[in-house]
Structures are given as structure tokens and as C-alpha cells.
Amino acid sequence: MLEPGVLTLAATPIGNPLDASVRLMRSLEQADLIAAEDTRRLARLVGALEVQTTGRILSYHEHNEAERTGVLLEALAAGERVLIVTDAGMPVVSDPGFRAVRAASEAGFTVTVIPGPSAVLTALAASGIAPDRFTFEGFPPRREGRRAATFGPLVAEQRTMVFFESPRRTAATLSSMAESFGEQRTAAVARELTKTYEEIVRGSLGELAQWAESTEVLGEIVIVVAGAEPVALSAEDLVEEVLARAAAGERLKDAAKALAKGQDGVTSSELYDLALSRKS
Image (cartoon, rainbow, N blue to C red; front, side, top):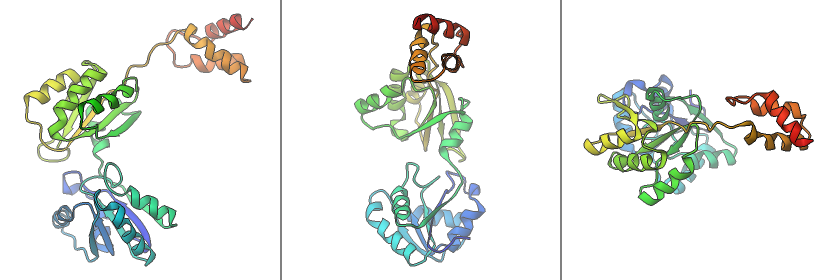
């Protein structure tokens, strides 16, 4: 049940309308005001789900989000049940909604979320690339120089990286990624997730760049890139940090144990002995 005076963000299907949750369907029927990124897409979704909306429908997208957030706040203040939906997936995540969440929170209104489909998590799960630690980087810049400047600081990132991209720029982006991260870096391109022509293409960035150049890339695109391999450190590399932590008050043995943990070829006793000899 939607509650009066509460702002609700609802995830919508990213392709297959059968992924819609029961909560989403009921909320569409109960909302007094539905703020939709594209009212035509909302109409198609409502038709596919065979639900009836009775509330007002307000166009709410990146070009009018700032000015129309006030309308949402007025509706909340009047005790209305306000629902935000975007074209696909979760509002706020590379979609409108953040301004409304921040404004509603600052004004003291409750904000809640109806979870559901996510292109980020769907692509990550299907990619075959380590999912335990990941970072979502959104859409890369459109211009080549700015793309390279964005990828540069990410070269050493050890977490799996997830990007959105337009099909028109996928080939150029994969080529730029291959230059920045290296052609051998493992990656995957997911397109048309949950739809009839869903496809996951896996390989190295070099291979994927060639694939994108030789085919017509269509549909919504998610690119998953493996993180950088951790750099193996020696006892010599770690000893100064051990001494610094000891100088700050930590026991030398505890500092050596903490820093040796997870380091191949470095034992805590070796690191402790080296630090002890340096200290004396």
C-alpha cells in the first residue's frame, strides 16, 4: 500500500514487462501522482501490465526535473501518494529522481523504494566477471579526449567496473577502454537485457572492440570491465607503513600482522623482523 505524503521510487522492467513486481503494479493503481520520465513509455507499460491508473501523470525528466520537483513536494504536503518511475530500472541511478529524493528528505518527507530490475546487477551477474566488489561508473563522456581522461584514473581500480553506453558509441568506447586498460583486460558487453534478442558478448577488450567495429550494435548497452590485478608487494614495500603505524601507537607485531595479511610471499614474522631491525 502506498502511504499518503510519502515519496516512492519504483523500479520498472528493463525489458520484459513480466519482471514487474506486484508492488509496482499496485502502486501504479494507487498513486495520486505518478512522475514519469516518459509518459508514453509509462502508458505502454501500464497497458502491458493490464493495470488501471487513476492518479495524475506528470512528465518528469532530466530537462524539467529541477522545476517540477516543487510540484512533487506540493503533492506530498497535501498528503498525496507520489510515485516516481523512469523508462527502465531504478529511478536516480543514471535516471531522474535524485533532486526529488534530496528535496523531499530535506523537507522532512519519508522516501521509500520499491526494488526491482536493475541493468547493472543483471549485466554483472551474467558477465562471468568477479561480482564481489564492483563500482558503477555510469555513462562515459562522449568526446574521445574526455573519455580517456575518465578512464585514466580507473586503470588501477581493482573492483569490477560497470558502465552504461549508447549503441552508437559502443565501438569507440571499447576502443578507448582497450587503449586505457589494455587490450587483454577481460570484459563483457550486455545488450537488450531481458528482451527477445538479449546477448552477452565476453572476451578481452581488444576482441570486443573488434567485434563492435565489425557488427551493428543495437539496443541498450551495459559494459562490464574486470578490475586490475592487485600488485604484489614485498616486505621492503610494506616496512615503512609498519613503522609509521607503530609510531602512531600501534604495536609493531600487530601492524606487521595486519599489513602482511593477504600479501602473497610476505609473512608477518618476516615483516616484523625487518621492521624491528629498521627501528633499532
